[in-house]
Length: 402
Image (tube, rainbow, N blue to C red; front, top):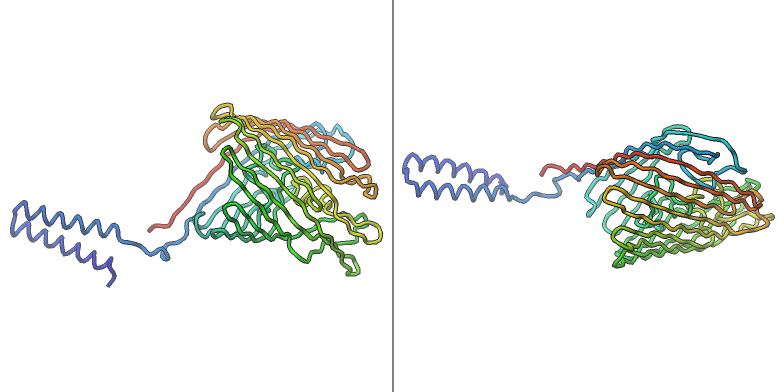
């Protein structure tokens, strides 16, 4: 018989004894003594330990419903995202207005964050011309170990500036890919899917890889914020139609920081430099001129391309409800006369944002943004944008009954 069952029988016995004493010996002292004993038994029953293995994991549901109204005075490429690398050649007078809810998100977490847990999250950017689900995160984490699909370990989310544009700064490190990582208090080590993106003017090759990207980062807390340093070593590769493969080694570095200048002003910065870094840039990974990790020159000569980028942002908390933010960013690919004239040379990105936190869950705001693209041949195109946003955020945690 379990301890819980034994306690229940002892409680029932005490109730019977109390009833008997009340009829047989109606003295107040005896009743108080028996009542005190009954209270102690009830307390022991309430404190009965439970077996954690018998309890199911907690479930946290989170997300947001976000609506954007966007107006472009020139052709900006994508309607819902400002990605300067997709701005078409030449300045156009093509005006466009769109309302979108693609930045709405939904996800859930199974298990407590302090223990083994799984996270699954998605948004509606799965297709450019219609609403389809796109996976943002799907990973398992237990203590310092994490495995699955999500943002690269090079990403510094705490240094991400505030923008209403769902894409964010062009030079931000933003790639999503499958990987495994070990996360210590300061040091993070990761192996991630290589996913080479190569510029081949003949379109006669496909991406090839024979080892994962190796990443190491160090994050250091400061009295007024933090800094993070990261390095990645890659082996980019291509496979030709006849089965021949070529590979090239590439190494890059990233530095980022978030500093509280005053109680109401914060500065955020990110800078990166190296070969084969284009895959990790927000403006290039899977968009526009995405194949800028390396270039296949004549004679099947694969060479990594040098890239550099960075952004500087600021946030000013005017009062508990209003926030003013600014950000400026740039990505530059090395200049090479062998590259096609229409290939990307540089992109620039800027935003001025005001957000009002109407309630803890509901916010709305307005943003002026600007994108610019320069080609290797010298052609330039730009796109200004005005955007309004309203977002409702929600989160709910359900825990199993003990």
